[in-house]
Image 1: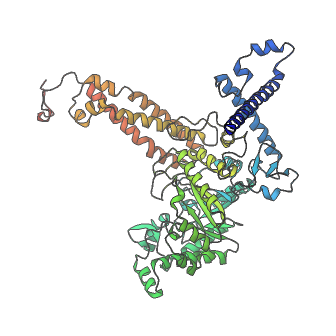
Image 2: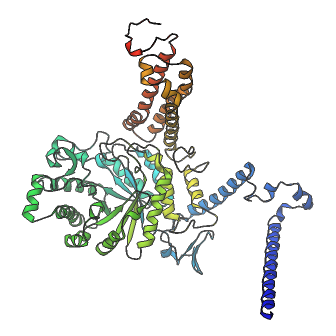
Image 3: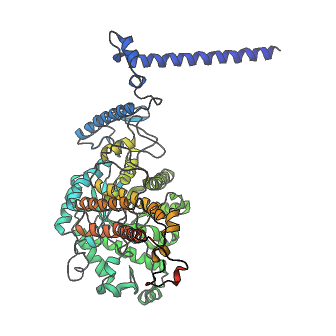
Length: 624
């Protein structure tokens, strides 16, 4: 009994102490709240305080989300960000204060102070724990120019934006936009390709914004822009398909090295050159390659590696200091022995790409192999151009899942793999022959969120700061009035970044398209506006009117969208790109609505209808 009584008294004591602690916490909270609002209370403080609304007293209470409170909170956030941005702009030595990937190297700076377990910069709100460093590699944004080259004036606005987001460089995939010259290559450039002076100006703009430039030139697969021409048709691996060049053709090495030399010459001082080598779908199929494999006792794998090494070795030896990069997908199924024996790691650094939400599909065996073979690797996510060849609005949530998955990979393998950088790709076409997918300005919000998460957020952390979140930073940089919708159809993006009008028109087109699909899926359309009804001019007028009630509004809105898109694209692209985009995405819907309108008019002209069966009637029937 003594033990029971003692245990009971102990429990009561614990409960009493817990209650006392809780009361003390409440007292402290109320005291802090009172002191924080003391400035609001004048001589007649009690009356002033009692006369104020709850929203005015506790401005940021989660229980008082009125319109006034939201407006005040937005103003407060803007003041914070204006202060942070102002401090960042004044710091020329360290650049953007929120984006210090190499803060460890600046540990002795007057503006850095080591305190406890954190590196604290001048703005004490921005604290980065030592245990969770930012992604310290290069942050490269891929600009795919396939047949859609931005105007030079657009780069003047784009590059400062990329710089402010924390980008360290750009991967320029010129394809047929590069001004190749000479009797061998002069037929390759598109008629609207950049000139040499254009590229020099682009490079100057990039370097002035602290962005290194990495040119990309395909040297194996995806050479459609070359092999489509009659002049180079005999260099195809498969005569019918212009995707892959034959590595054994006598002219292949000469042509590719000439292209490489011209690209490097126009990009003096570059450190990296990307040589593609992805998606080599046809290999060892032509007679020349078959003979080469017999002569050298090669497998197809060895044929592939021989070409890659030959191209990379040429670059290393001819252009000292330039490191070739390659896409990695053709390496994934190779054995560690095959990679070691080819010595490919001595000549290239692979860029491991995967654009799906779950990058973990890339196995640990692959990463173990790469860690054993390659001293350094790059990774590649996507901010647009990876969810469908004909998409014109970007699903940000999809790409963020991909990006977060990549950050998990980095966190998991960084102890054994040196991740030199990340390339955030933005494909403009799936290949040379495909239609345009999301235009560059349409993908800017997705790009901003992805790059900023690499810059600001450490793996496993939600925010660097408890006061300044990544969405706030992105919204300020993009000049957004409201949060950016994460998926198409979830709202309109109201921002003022360079080219934002293009995204606005694309989102409006998406909305109209959804309305048209909704209209056409209506049961009234399916029952009274079929092709059979139209062919026989046989339908109920009331149902036709009901089915097409929104038709005129959709047609009018589509007219406005076409007008606005042409105006917006004229600021960013040449007229050829605008014509292609309108022809691809607006005109088919316009034609569809026009046919539906004509069908409606045809059906509504009828006042009398024939007896069935309708297929017995000929065009001259007057049976009423």
